[in-house]
Amino acid sequence: MKVSHILMVLIVFAWPLNYLYQRQLGAISFLLLAIFFLVVSIKEMKKVKQAKKNDSEKAHPQKFK
Image (cartoon, rainbow, N blue to C red; front, side):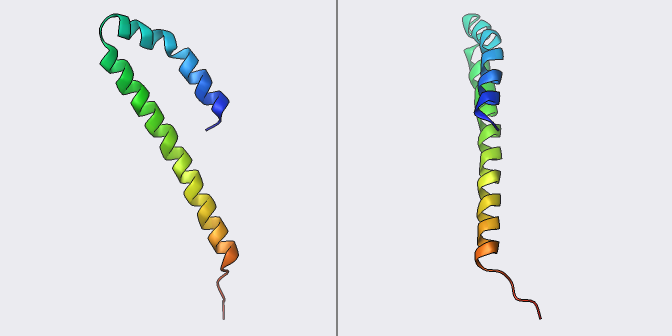
């Protein structure tokens, strides 16, 4: 996920999360932020694993008979 997309999402959701926090429902906003960052981190880890897999296949090509 691009950094610009992450920033746009955080900016768009800043006011509603602040509203929840002001109404003493801050746990909900922290939960939503935690879920958002979990999704972002899972996507990044998938990219890293895919890149490692592609690099290892290029370094050790399989021999076919």
